[in-house]
Length: 529
Image (cartoon, rainbow, N blue to C red; front, side, top):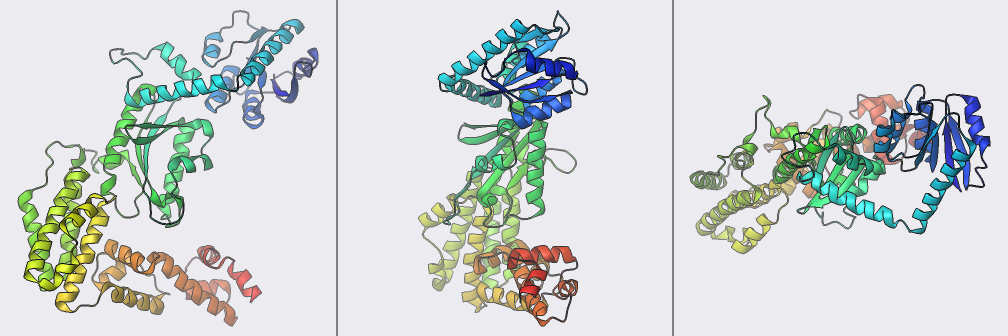
């Protein structure tokens, strides 16, 4: 049985339409009614009726606007328009939104019966065809989506967008007031858990009809359609920027480049191009950085960054100086100098504007120069380095620049340790863990610890995660919650006092962290024990 929604601002007309024909005989049941445009739009979204019988002149939201908004939200059912105007002044807009059924008021019983019968026959025919037409439309829409992203849908010499093309986009549910193109990549983490792709996550917060998925030249793309979709995705991004992505999150292995937001279909190609430029800079993102926006291509003053300039290059002479400085730092046992040289190297190649392949070659050559010098000068260091082929394969296979810098840091750390009998990285992390256990109640930050222990904060964070298998902030919270449990079991303190004693100034935040780590609230833990 199909469903029908009846919308008219006059109650007697609504009731009359319900009774004027035998809806059940025609294969329909009344799903609901609405007395104004807002109610009609809400009911369409909630009930998704097969058919909407609606007066054109509706209060609050005009009938044509209800149809437009319903189509934008993905409604694919049929409309019968009731109009008191014999010339149908709104017919053109209605046709654009796939409405071809009009009945003039006062409603004629036979005309309504025949129109509903015709619609039911169309529904049955499409159902018998097994959705073949829907598949064809979907395939055609996919071709059009690709053309929009590539900029080939509209003719270049046509200054004004063709109305017929706009009508076609409207019929395909591709005509919206705002768009944004995303390019996403998923890299395998090497763990046993599933590696998610962005399309796996989108349905959790976006309506199914508010985006399109396609692939162009191996770029996996998402086209967001409409202000609501663009806004919801922005909220999604902001949420994860405020709270760092955990290592077990589906987003941990996803990188997303967000193209510019555009306000018409002929500008979708510009959004795709900006997303493509940003996706090309994925290699240079920092540790834990999973999103890059169009504004990242601009400096603070709004001017273009080096990414857009044509005179980019990596200086071969400077390459030799960099290798020499790193070697000198290792030989002299100056670990801080070595770390600073690597940080400067990272910044230099990142800001050069060169692509990832050229940067990988540049870094490989530096590492091979370091290997040759140290291996020849100190035979005991030769086993630290992989073969030339192994080094080249490793560097070329990295997803991010920081992974290469980390690789170099680990090798050179071990070289300093051997040459100068220094403590290894595991001992440094042991010292940090010991320090944390003694000072967990203080406002500890990774930046402060890095300064105290003579490390770069980004490197120290990665080293801590690599050594312990968890991030420092997570470990700090674990340490605090462990102590909080001990204090709660003593029974001397109230929950807010325990929160302060273990380093949380906000008792609500303490409660959230306690529940996350312990699986229950502090009150529940105290009561249970």
